[in-house]
Length: 363
Image 1: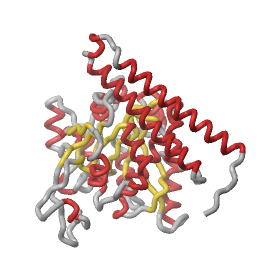
Image 2: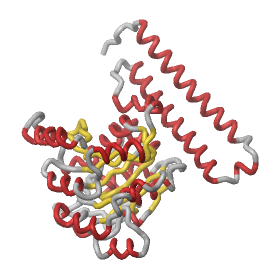
Image 3: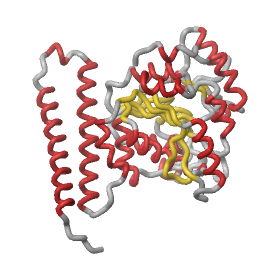
Image 4: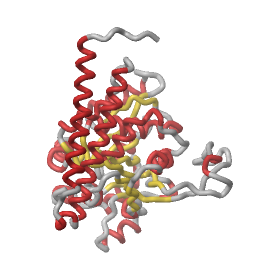
């Protein structure tokens, strides 16, 4: 490799990057200095303390992004899109971005979601503007770029305008890579408190999900979902088989606690962490295990909320009648709603919130 001679622009860019890093470091020092001299009555308020810690966490994430960007420039490499997230502080703030994982052959599922819990047209735009909730179907590209599968998605996008396209080649065994690409892309486009991943065969109550996440928005490094610890399947040919089972110990062991893959949410700082480090984060066979592995070594708050993994009727219906509306519902036996393109309408009718419920809360 040979090093291209430095020009005035590259020197100026490095100087600006250096000044940005210095500014972030100074901001962190000011915040930490002030936190050591707060009045006693202030220190007793948990929400303020958590907000301060979250601010520091966000600055640390921005500092890491700035450092990564500077190293990329100094090494003569182009600046990756995921490293431009440091600029996201100038963007509008959202409560959550909901990415609905979907596939090329899931058109009926997408239409059933559009016909139930996902607002359409002007209502979806209003949801973004007034409630700070962004919803998109998430899909990459086919192995044959520009082929019939990609063209069908392009036609659907032209009609509905509700897709987030990833630089990713679709495939069932590539869900872990798709998850990384989703978080990295979403955090670069929208500055949100939370980033949610949900499957296209799951029913969601938006107001309940929004209120659930709002309770944790002041905390730093939050990982929300239905936490589980299932068995590690080593036998070849079985569903959810783990090729790297030996890494988790002997036969009969279980995975570490992680959120089930039907729906989970992570805070902005964790999504930023994944975006910055996506090229060195290991991918396991199952995407929910992969996300849990990326976070298990970090100082993360695991929030186990069983309201995000209710069963379909009568389970979610009984809970709704008792005043405990579910944030998400699906069938464990099918890892989603069985025959969801047909049954999600029934689930929505019996367990769904009223249409105007989402407009009532102030998140």
